[in-house]
Image 1 (cartoon, one colour):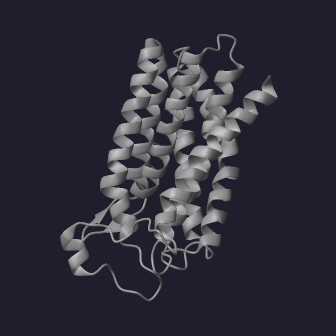
Image 2 (cartoon, rainbow, N blue to C red):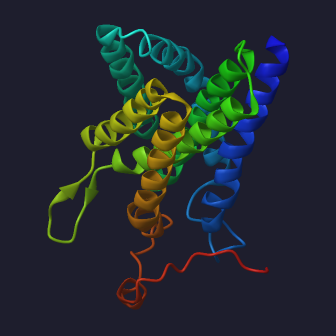
Image 3 (cartoon, helix red, strand yellow):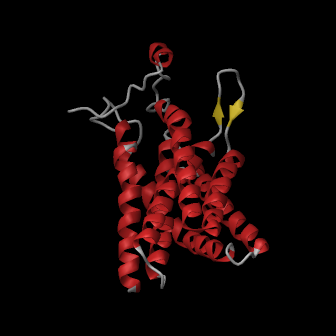
Amino acid sequence: MVQLALTFGAVVGVVLSAGYVWWEVGRYAAPQVPESRFDERKEMFAYTAGLFAGIPLAAVLLLLLAAFPQGLIGLVAIYLALLIGLTELGQWLLLRSVYFGSDGSGPFYAVGFRAGLAGILILAVVAQVLSAANLSLATLAVALVQSAALLALQVTGAIFSLPTRLENGTTRGGPGAGAMVTGFGLFLLTLGPAFGMYGAVAAAAIVGVVGLLMYRRIARATLDRVRPVGQVALQEDDEASGRSPFGRTDR
């Protein structure tokens, strides 16, 4: 039963996380665009690094989910801080490396890393539900909704953790902003089950929908502005129109 739970959890985690990288990040790779916005091999390595980094973080997430229902507030705070801090540290180290930080495509490697990390967190959540004695279709459905929310939360937090210089000279985002977004989302996900099945679904739905809206409004705009090394920023007419020049084609 344990092997079956881990296998199914791995399938869900890989399908959601790798599917995000293939579809959403793939919008910015040739032949969808004339020239890829990032190095495809580096993107896969970043995703793989996220999978490995997610293993210890998944253990922390399970401890967090176990401590919250017992009212162990001190442990909840410690596990939540560990989960957020190690996630931000992993992304920071990845983008500060020579390999991933030298071509100006860091935002793509950041979301790839966090997608891989989310895949392992999803594995842990789904496997825990399948291993429970009171397994039902309802609890499995809750785990799947939570899985989608975890993915949306991680890739959105990845972009918020990137310092972005605005046109007026100010800087938006950074590890602090990313930690706040990720921390608040994780807190809601762990708080929801305390109010029963409906509370768990509602909390996961809120995190997922808000994360998706924030991603579409802010994260995509950040990815749209990433150019290959040596190229200039987006043309003024593209920025003025508000349309993204990147999208899947029939080529």
